[in-house]
Length: 165
Image (tube, rainbow, N blue to C red; front, side, top):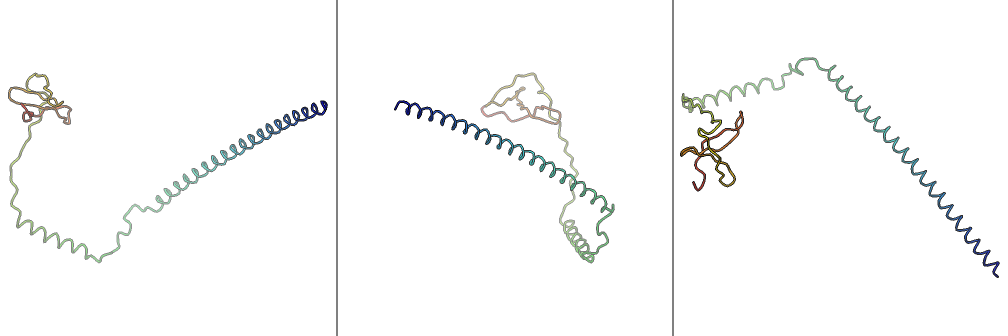
């Protein structure tokens, strides 16, 4: 009986070893198949992308050539009389009526010219900023200034006194 038990144990160990070897072989085969498929797919995708890019480039080149060959340097359909001249006549008549009405109701323009003085680049006196609600103000005598930006950079403009001053 002990011989049968030892034989059974040996058979189980051998079967376990064979099963493990078979699982490892199958796993290796599956991994190789996945890697091969991935390499083929990657190669096919790259080939497709390159082919599409080349086709798009050729299409653009063909379109440019067609436009260049078909452009005559002039006006397309310039001699067509699409409206028989009626649109131009209507426009001229409408402009004359509107112009006459505007001339009859519009007073002559005034001849006053306003020239704005440029904003000072610095306050006329040397003062430190006074912060009012986190906004810097500058006081020179009774006049208040605030900073702004002009085409030449920072400028100071005269402003009313801030609230509370």
